[in-house]
Image (cartoon, rainbow, N blue to C red; front, top):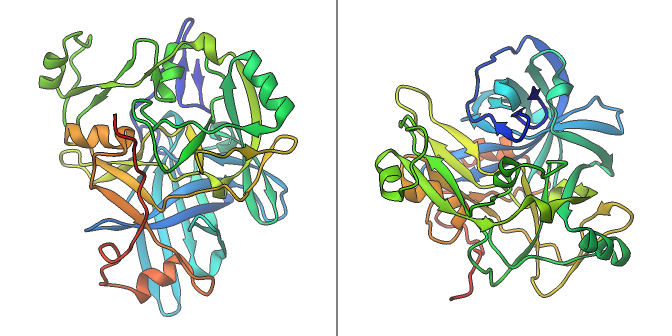
Length: 374
């Protein structure tokens, strides 16, 4: 059975997550919605990054939201005072969306350097079936429902204290962070199979496998790491975990503007357009001072004093093993996108044209994650 919500085929004893995109190209239906996006810069590129897609009409209090899985480089067109932006986004089950908006659709800039636009969404019938989750509008801010999975005794402690302790570990679970800690959440409502664990960068055997661009995987995957490397397969060490330790769940309503930006892979398939894939799309994390806690009230995690955002995203080159590893490792890479901070008097589309042909990367100073030495 295909689970349209979580991009997977549900089998009797496991879940098989779908790792190919754009097979079902149907953009015949029109929907009203919103896109939360960021303007990001590398040494050679500037890209509008779709952070969150929302299916919602103007007066709705609740909405469905969709997690983008990949996106093509956007197209921007200026006609006198109007600026149009459009791009294609791959979502669950091989479906594609076409997103269109303009500078006149701009609503608000948020503290995480993202902007909210009203947009047109073109996609398949019954688009709500492909939504990743539900959310609510609170003071113009989109809040989304996410899950934290843990042991029963820890769940009881969290609920009784209203405190959220931060993890000191990076996404890969192999390096200790120094200047930030994270509270980890996921869009997945359950972690019940080995493949579910891999979607949150964990594994029952301590490894996950990643494939280089322009390679066809040799199946079954060899237990010999050197042989896998010859076949374009990276055996990546991750945190060893068991589904038995993730049996209890807490659902939170989270301010989407406090969630850390997701890292990316840049794909360059032969004879096809370059596209970007969101690494670990079902992992969501909130950063803060590692020596302090977060608080929540009822089921809501709101912006608070301890929130900390780094204004960059790792972008791994998927044609290289170092690029595949970079978004997980987070430390050993110079390949990043820096997130543009936009003033309240402007939006990202207007900024793009008013700063055309400018170096928006090298002179932008940002803080980076640091790591404790072993």
